[in-house]
Length: 198
Image (cartoon, rainbow, N blue to C red; front, side):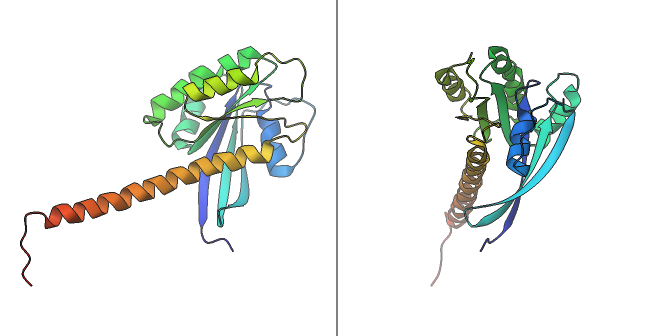
């Protein structure tokens, strides 16, 4: 039985046509639509169980265009975790993620513990422009997790969101440990230099 409820705001970024909406809809509704309909911004909620806890993912599917920089900055500032999506069939879509990643770093500051997934989507397609190794190398440079997916075939879609949630859980656990440690250190500092009579 799940013990407690947690909300996580996940923001999905990427160029137009890389499959951001398709990934989100495949995860939330289990559907895939063949036609491309540009998104300005949509938010979906999905309740999942992870490590005996109920987690509500609030997933924000952002626009693929750069026409709304204020919306992008707001999404970053409110987001807890980020999915950066490119199409393996287009190197340009991977290159478009760099300024978004840089903006996340600028707004969030210390990137330790900010869950980010770099996602190469459309891995079911044959005309690959971005090798798997290249995506993996960039994810190491950016200190984030990496996965290739296919919204069309449902390959690694559930795993993508589970891994992102695991990254968030690890951050929460490490923050709790640091807090407990600092409280015990404070107690020691308080008692330091004082005499106790028994």
